[in-house]
Length: 482
Ligand code: PA5
Image (tube, rainbow, N blue to C red; front, side, top):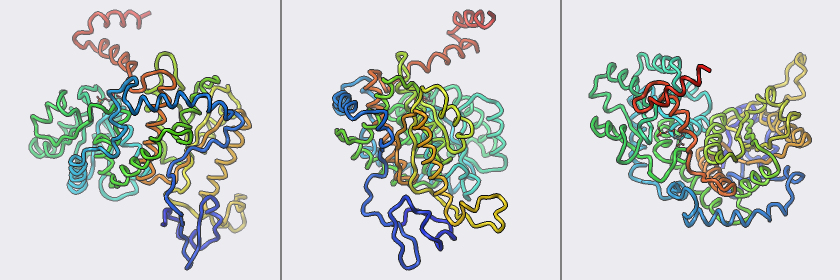
């Protein structure tokens, strides 16, 4: 099973590049032979040994049992939002087929797909697309370009999106469970008009795809009136758990990603990380987070040495930030891409206030590799890196960083991922979901609500003079003057 693509030249060279894989060479080819597809995703706590004692895991495990049982019996806080638990197997197959058809149509009749949504209606789709296809998929790949919008109120951003549609055949996927989210609704009203002006109202109605509530809300009503193809955000799945519903699946399928493999990965994750066991890696990660939190750590930094993981970092921040940051509690989720951010955040992580622990997402097989040639004359002094692949250099950077940061007193756990394939990303998503739910219950918060996000909206509406907010407007304006 050849899981990796190597640089053409690398295939003719020694196996230095493969020091982290179980590999056999035969018939002049390099093949990765895996006995079985064991764990695409696992948690490795070997660098945590000097920070957490085994008894600490044993002491907290009964609380994990309780959290697990509350999840399974749907008796814990937020139990109306547990649709994600079995989603990888119980998902709506008829809608799944319609998503594939819609994606095929969009890929054949459009140059550009604008995906309008924010928060849970945005991050997961973009995270998976960029993890699997790469940060530069729009520039590198032929065919459909996918741009995410409706996730800001910046006029500059909206104008740039408008420019990207110039002279292009485009479609819109508007995603909003409530249908009333300001950022998304504002962008959508502009982009819809742009589309209608470009192709006429009748054709525009065939190019607008609405992902929203099954029955209620402004967007649902509008979609029904206009006859737009619609997809459902299930009632029992919250925004940050919605990437494997139509919310994420339609844009992901439009990017040409195999959504069957993605769901299979999540289903495999459900098998592995849905079991009650001290060896359940999602639960070990949840326990690690909670133990370190109780020891005074207030920040988790999720880091990856692959830039394609940038938006997965953002998705993780929403998942854990919205789930745990309440009742004046919770670890603050932060993220880095290394080695890039070692040149900015590296100093603080090594030497600054000891408030954080780190979790590295270790991607075992990268999407691509690059063979480093020897340079005649060695003018840059880098020939010590020659005759091996860049993935090895990246790995050595990771190993060096792990040792430096743990020496500097930063507890550090590893989430090991075979690759950023659709399957493995699906499994990783389920890993994070389970870990987050249990982590939230260990903190005694409701991991499935987000009451705090309303405050800025109320103030913004009041300051903008939305009817019904008159009293608050006067109060806020007075406060701004002081
Ligand atoms: O997690 C959440 O609930 C939020 O991030 C929402 O997904 C976000 O506010 C978008 O909401 P809606 O889909 O209703 O437009």
